[in-house]
Length: 427
Image (cartoon, rainbow, N blue to C red):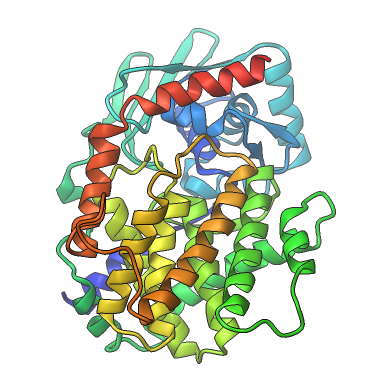
């Protein structure tokens, strides 16, 4: 694979964002509709897919102290700047927040979900003021605005289902090729990845000093003076990942860099690898190449599955990447990385997504620690054997099976999960 193409794929799959991706994409859709309207809407109505509703119903919205989609939709209407994409909620002013809260308080914002949407990631934002109306539709990916209209006249339109040709992909890339390819790249080639890791580290550091966030600080307090390997690497990665994820899920106003459409995937990916590299005192060039391996593996796993999955992408896809990168940092080869990824999927594949909220941080912490341990075991020749359950003859084949399980076997699970969440909320 051409190195320039490889780097373009990685760049295209990382995005800076503030807050959980699902409420932010709702804010983005409303913002684009408000731009088309040409003034601040008086009424906002948003319809989302079951998957977005499930993911956003309990999660904190940064800088608001509130949870869920109505406040996110109202902020989109007030801000009305779709150029910011997933960083839309950065720099929200007190005046904007007050205006958004007033919209919600007077019942001007409604959010509902709809089964059977064209894509599992789908939303339609409709806005109105006076006699004018406008709408925007996002489908297939968090920033893929497929239609904008004003007063019934379509202003822009594209395919609602993203064609394979519209994505830069790593399809066909094998682990052996990946390990060889990263050796041709320098730290400067991969500086955008190390910079992304530092953005996510700042989120973790902020969480570790926040008295309202408990998990990361509790893990930090458990650290012994000198943990033996692999436990030092497992503990550091778990602490950083858990802290940043908890902050993001609670609605802390800390920006992070997402991978393949998911902030938690980005947190686990970047901070899992960074934690291992710091524990091992790996040189900067090794860290940069390890981040390239991890990010590429996440992109590969999500390439076989949908952008939004019924399994927990942060726990599974990102942990596959961390496992492969840990093998690299320990001096292992592609065969050991294959074994480590196989074990991650074989052991963790049934971690399901039950919506975005603080428990995601516990999933992230547990999975990244397991991934690192599996990498150490893989170097000893230990792992889930091929043709065992979901595990196939190669990591790539197992990724494909995981994708099939999600895309075909787990279609109805999100609706059942949403029903459970709504029952709990109503209890």
